[in-house]
Image (tube, rainbow, N blue to C red):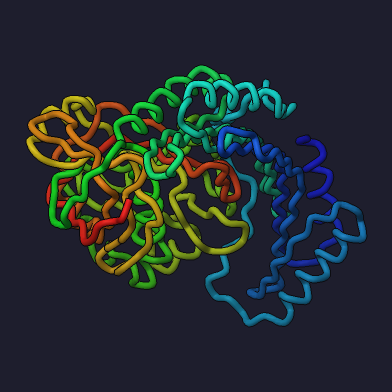
Length: 451
C-alpha cells in the first residue's frame, strides 16, 4: 500500500506548476458490524482513497480534494486547486511548505493480523456478547479498520504512517429500554478486544442488573465519581473549546490569558502523547512538524495550547505539531492522557459517604464556552452511594456544570487509566483519550429525567 500512495502523490506533484505543492494521500478500510435487539443488523465495509492538495502561488493558496485515482481526476484536482489559489486573497499567515525533516520513529499502532477484515470474526464476539447478556437485549457494534496516510511536498518532506483501530460497545437493556448498562473498549489490536470483551460484557451486565427500579433524585450539588468512559466527551470538548490554539488566539477559549497560571486542581495533569500505542501513535502532523509528548496542564497549571504553524505564528510561539486536518487550521490535541491518581475505583466509592456514581454522559452540549459550562444527561447506570456502598439506582439527571469549576473540585483520581474513544470515530486518523475515573465534589445537577 505504501508504494501505491507514493505513486499517487508523485503523479500530483508532477502535474503541479505551483510555487509550492503539498499532497496528502490516505487509504482507509473500515468494517462496521452493528447489533440491536440481540441480532446482527448490519455489516458495512468502506474502502476508499482520499487525495487532498494545497497549491501555493506566492501567498495565495488553493485546496482541493478527490477520491479519483485516474490521471484525469488528478489533473482536475490540480486544476481546481490552482483556480482557487489564483482567485483567493493573499494570506500573510500561510505556513511555509515543509522540507526534509526528521521526526520520531514511533512504532505504528498497527495490527499486522488485521488487514484482512473479517465480519465472521466480529460475529463470533457478538454471538457471545448476546448470550452473556440474556435475558437482556444486546445493542452495540464492533468496528475494525485501518488507515494508511502519506504526506509529500514539493520541497522534499516525506512522511508515511499507518494505524489500525478496533472498538466494541456493549449496551444491555431490558424490554422496556429503561434498565440498561454500558461498556466499551478500543485498541489497535483485535486480540486485545478478543481477550477483553467478556470482561466488558460482564461489566455491562452488572450495571444493567443494578440499574433496576431507579428512584427519582432531586437536583442539587453532589459528590460524583465519573467513570473513565464518562469523561471522554468532556475531554474532547475541552480540547476544542479550551486547548485548541485557534480558540485561544480568537479569545473564545476559557483558558485565554491564563498561560502559566494555575487554573485547575493540582491533581489534574494532562499530557498529549503521540508515542503511546493505545492513543494511536503519530510521528508528524499535517504541516510536517514532528509530534512529541507535551504537557498541556501540569498539576493544574496551563502550560501551552495545542498549536499548528499558523496559530503559533500569530501568538509568537512554536508549533506543537497539532495540525490535524488536511490544510485547514484547527489545531487540536488528539492524544490526550490524564495522569493517574492513587486510588482504586472501589476505594473512591468506599471513601464516599454520600454521592453518585456516573457510568457515562450523553448528549453533551456547550452552554458557555468562556466558562467551559456544559450540559447533558447521565445514562446507562447512575447509582446512589451511601456510606461507601452503592445502594440504589437513580433516574438519569441533567447536569449544567462549569468544568473550570469541576476540575478545581477534583478529590481523587483512579490509579489506572484506560483508552476511551467514540465508537467508529476516526477524525483523519484513529484517536483516543486515556483517562482514569474521577471523583469531583459539588457537581451540579439541574433537572431529573423521566427514566
